[in-house]
Image 1 (cartoon, helix red, strand yellow):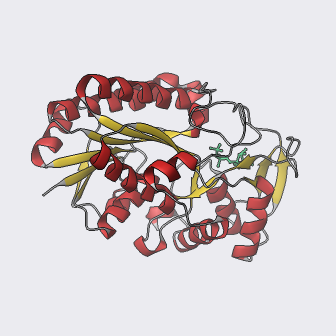
Image 2 (tube, protein in one colour; image 1 turned 120 degrees about the vertical axis):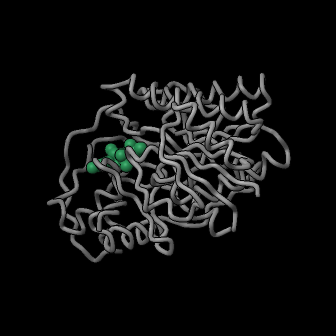
Length: 329
Ligand code: UDP
């Protein structure tokens, strides 16, 4: 039986990947150290192996016990602010974890990997929408660690024939209400889940980080992409690698931008809750606008996101209102 290995499959995006693979009847095993993930989130997998990617003997066991056909690697730390104060934690986990995974793949002759990269590889963008050929100059160690891994993938393809697709995510959001999974970070720092917690009355207000940006309403514009659209691209990427063996880097975004105020207004409409908002100082390092060009993913992978902002927010609301304390209840 051919199996897909999902590293970080108990995390937010990884668990949505596992649910999609289960929906498609694809055999899946997960490795996750459960430092930030939740075992309940990986239910769709045949087996959850709890351990760290940097543990070579552990990975060797996983590859020996299963007929792994391809790897999807979500396992990473992803807090931008923390990466600035503790860069070695990010290089140590993200870069060394991927290095260990690639080593196991090489030893077990597995030749396909889909890797979660990030729009943070671009840093301050040169232009909008951002294309994959634009300059990459990360402004934090999180983005730098992902860019370093993209480099490692390129050279491992060259030397060992491990083909890869690196997917640069813009702002992943939403949930899969049918699978009973959603976003549960501790601490939570992302806008949409914080807006949902404010709607639930768990926070007194949502802070708007700056309203003096050069945008129509003065608040930052981001490209929010439904997590279910996002994971569909990974499956297309695996199929692309299977068919062509051609490695590549792709943006995953909707191509549309929404301001912080537009997100809050849409959430007020969908939840019917007041959601008090207070303007606060800018957050360091936030570019004013980040919007993806998704032309390359459309042309090469045949990916077309189909879920808009209202569906993102109503699915996020379905998750948060039914799981006010995340996976704990
Ligand atoms: N943001 C905000 N208040 C919050 C959290 C985020 O105004 O409590 C803004 C943030 O400045 C950015 C946007 O919302 O412009 C999205 O931030 P998030 O942290 O969700 O994702 P990022 O774009 O940083 O990856």
